[in-house]
Amino acid sequence: MRRALIGVTLAALAFSHQPAGVYAMPFRAAEAAPKPVAKQLSLGGTSWELVAIRDIGKIRRPGASAQPITIQFDQGARQVSGSSGCNAYGAAYVQDQGSPLFRDVVSSQRACADPAITALEGLYLESLGGATWLELVHEKILVVGSPGSGRRLIFSLSEQKKGN
Image 1 (cartoon, rainbow, N blue to C red):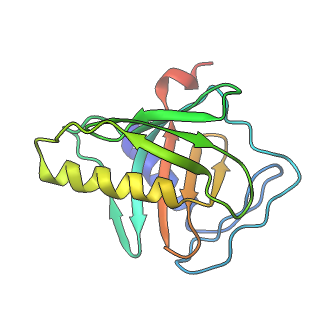
Image 2: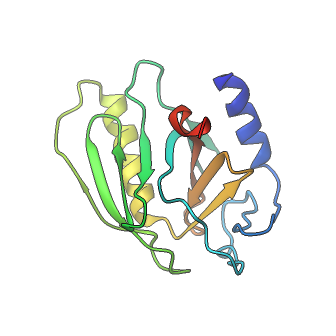
Image 3: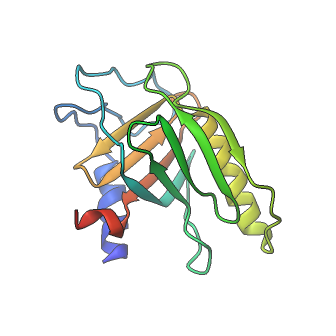
């Protein structure tokens, strides 16, 4: 099921759409930030797991043996937290269009045993800190990015929240 969701996730991001209440995101490297629609996204209380990082023509996925990279949006607290692969992290979350979505990203400083996980964790935290927009696709896929970098963080809704 996870492989099927990844395929659907990546296929869904290959085109632009704009369902009511979400940000639109064409899947191109250099573009202007998506225009906000009237409705704010409501992500409070949701948890997401990173499926892939799209980085200018490259797709990077967490390895099967790696600890999942996650993000959890706190209910009403305007905070996010999660696992970045080896370490725990947290940040303030804002929805001001054009400014960073995740401010003051902090992380524990535990050393990773695997250099590949260390590299992926660094790329993830850098991407999260530079993100200026996000999109919710079919209420099951979350995409976070920055228009100038071409980098996208692609998440799927965590199993624990799908049943609710």
